View 1: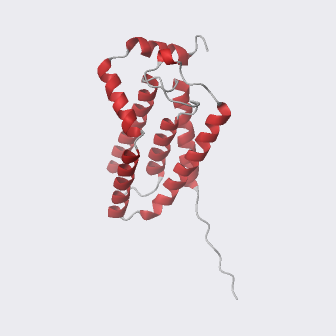
View 2: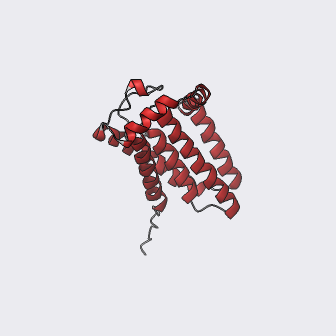
Length: 181
């Protein structure tokens, strides 16, 4: 891996970390791995869906997240790629690194929400795209900055998440045909 973009970027970041940004990204990491944060985000999402009466989009988003949970874990085991070495990291995550579960999760949720055809306003959708893409970028940058993942782990995580969301949202329920008696 000597001379790779992953290694060169990790070295450059390790040499240029600043305490305030490290604290912010550590805080984000703690929130992102908190069950309470997931529960609050899920509750807020359900309240928005309930308020707008858009229940029919939830199964596709749930399918996307479920696929991601199964497939990203299986990919991690099969690829079995080590994370950045301890001397380049300030966050020490365990297990294989590729694909990044953080990148997978954020991109699968954002993509599934954006592709679900429930948007009633082009303006609202544009805002959601900006917030969603911005959130994915911040999470990915944070994981690379903290040394929990290589750049390629994050890029593959985003690709897997987007692909699974596209697959899940494109699934159309089959209509049952009633046979005449």
